Length: 633
Image (cartoon, rainbow, N blue to C red; front, side, top):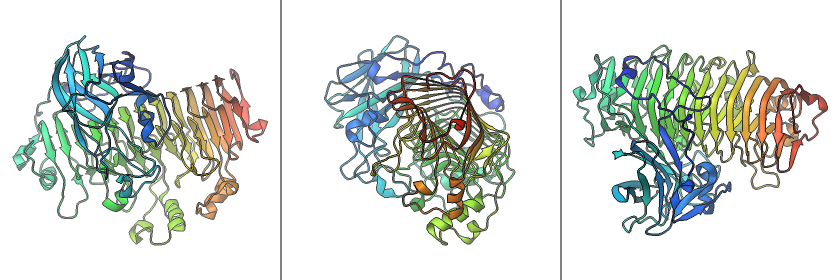
């Protein structure tokens, strides 16, 4: 049985004690070298004891016969009949469990509900409530339309998770998931189990006002969206006691819950849960400081369909100045934390935001997106699993360029007059992403940067990417150009990253490398990649891909953007101590004219590539500026 390295999974500080509340600015003590510092132990189903069917490994996407392709490690256990089980020996005392699973969709879409037995030392102690209402999307890469929730070809998004607080599970106990006669789903695919010791509920600190003072009571089944909005306007510090709160409908025109610059806290992410379609927070005011912490948000999103059904995020819009989001758990939203929504709703960009100690699971778009001028902000000590777009992205969009591009592509009615005339918000810069662990983004990348300057991703891990690179460095989506000071990726692991996405129906589908540079709308410059381990990428380990007139296949692209792609180069790009092991195709690949300009290679090694160490296309020798220590290619 494989259990995660205990040095990687040390006790996490999120919601651990009331002291976190008393000193919200305190930083977690991150002792590990890569990834988030978390309190659970992960048990992979295929490494447990089982009498059932072990699936995989497989990386065959969008295929209901290969559900395990979306599992962590690309293997899983399928419980097909009564009596099938999978079990583990608990390595540490625990009182909380998360199970990542897949059960079938209903015939007409919309999902089914089912149960599964949780056994401790041979006794069924809990019945886990499972659902597929938030799983099973269709039509492959299609987004923006609720039709993707209707059964059809190219299914994906097979997995969801259930979490539960349970009676104490002692160290050394046998923990078993077993299908009994009462558990009636046609099948159960089990990916993994996380076991942890969840802290007790926090108590309300001095100076806070409880939501109960505004008639908002936990577990009462009442939709309190309007009441929560009223409470947020009535006190400087608002407290949610342990329990479940519904927020489904807001009257009066508000899109979500506008925080006017107050502190909102709960009893901990295992104890305070805000649920519903309007469990979506904004920070209202260009320089407001908004604080959110110690609760969970569970949405009702079933597709990436905001174009049809409106915004569906947990935190959205500009986040003021020096705001804080910490100790939050987010599931079943289109996106979790999208900072800096497009104009006209933003009067100035977010500055100094800190996002820390978060768990983001099962979204239909990004985990965290620092967008539209967001600068000097930090994302740290977060774990993300099953995001439907980039797990963490820094998108330095230049709004006026975006308006020009989309107007050319879709016509003059794509934007309102207010949107069309909104000003640029400035280049996104000075952001830091560190100690983040990402598992299985089912669309897009673990980490992505689109333009900007002086941004950093470091000390993080990326594990199992279905369709895209693990890291994407991309001049695309109308960004400000890359510029000095340079953007850095440092001390990161990419495991089983890269996949196939776009042009699948033609003779040359795009096979994305694990680390990809893309000259889609212009040059890439001022990039430093250092101390990267790329392990078993599906295709190439490192990919340099160009774009331009010879490579257009039906896209409607503004002439200025196509000209920029034709003339794009790599400049002041350096890779140092990057190690590619057992690539599915090439260690390093140049494609579609991506070998323009020059890249500095120092200590870049390639070993065990299945096709060849290097596919240079027609790149000249001058593209490969080789220093010392390169090996294997």
